[in-house]
Figure 1 (cartoon, rainbow over the protein chains, first blue to last red):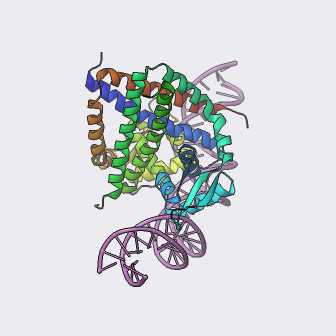
Figure 2 (figure 1 turned 180 degrees about the vertical axis):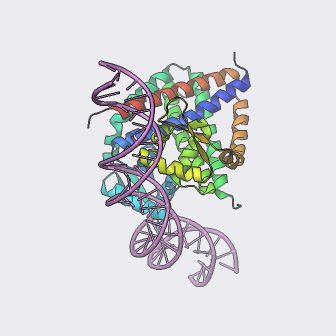
Figure 3 (figure 1 turned 120 degrees about the vertical axis):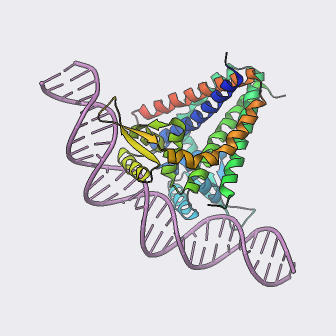
Length: 155
Length: 155
DNA sequence: ACTCGATTATCAAGTAACTTGTTTATGCGA
DNA sequence: TCGCATAAACAAGTTACTTGATAATCGAGT
C-alpha cells in the first residue's frame, strides 16, 4: 500500500499527464477539421465555454490582440464562430461558437464522453464528490498562480 | 445533496476547466521566458516527460516534422534542449530538456507546487487513491480516443 | 460633469514560423 | 534481400504572427 506522499506524487503526475492528453485530443480533432493549431485552440476553448471575448481568447491562445483579430476573421469566414456586440461594453465583442462547429466536433467527442461517463459510474458518490472537489480546487490554484506569473513585473 | 448524475457532470466540467487552466499556466511561463507558443509547448512537454523524440513532439505541438526540425534548431541554439542519438534506432533522435530550462522554469512553478501539495494534504489516503485512479483512467480514455481519431481514414 | 490614463479591438507593414514536397538513412516484414 | 514504412532534415513558397499605431469607449479621481 502506498504511503500518502506516494499517493500525492501519483496524483500530481497523473494530473500532468491529463494536461498533455487533453492537448493531444484537441489536436486530433482540429487536424481532422483542417484547422491550424491556433484555430484549434480557439474552437476548443469556445466548445467548452460557449462564448468568450477576443481578449480572453488571446490569453488562451497566447496571441497578441492583433493576431487574434486575424484568427477571428478566419474562423468567422469559415462560419465556425460569430462576433456579436458586447451589451455591457461598447468597445468589446462577444465571440460565440457557431452551431456548425458544434455539429462538426460533436461526433468526434461522443466516444470519449461515453467512456468517461461509464468510468464515472464505477465510482461511489462519495468518491465523485472528492474528485470534483479536488479538480475544482486544483484548477483554482493553477489559475491563481498563472495570473500571478502574468502580473509579475520583474525581469 | 447532488445526485450522482449531477456529480458526474460536475467532474466532467471541472476536468475541462483544468485542461484550460493548464494551458493558461504554461502560456504564462513561456511568455515570461520570451518563447513563442510552439516552443512553450515543447518545453512544457519536456519539462514533464524529461525526454522525447521529434515525432512525439510533432504530435504534441501539432507541427509537421519539417517544422519540428526548425523548432528544435531554435531551442537547441537557445540551449533549452539537446539532441542526442537514439541508441535503439539510428534514424532517430532523443530530445532532452537542458538543465538551463529546468532552472528557468523551476522558480515559477514552486508556488503552485506547494499550493497543490497542501491541497492534497487535506484529502484522506482513501480519497487520494480514488483521485489517482480516476485521473489515470480518465487520461487513458482520452489518449485512446485521441489515437482513434488520428487513425480514422474517412472524410 | 470632465479629464486623463487604461482598455478593447482593429489595421497595415514587416518578420517569423509553418507547410509541402523531397531527400537520406535506417528499420523491418515478406 | 527486396521493398515499403518510418525518422529526421532541408529548401522553396505560403501563411500566420508581431509590432506599432489608431479609434472608440470605459472608469477612476477631481
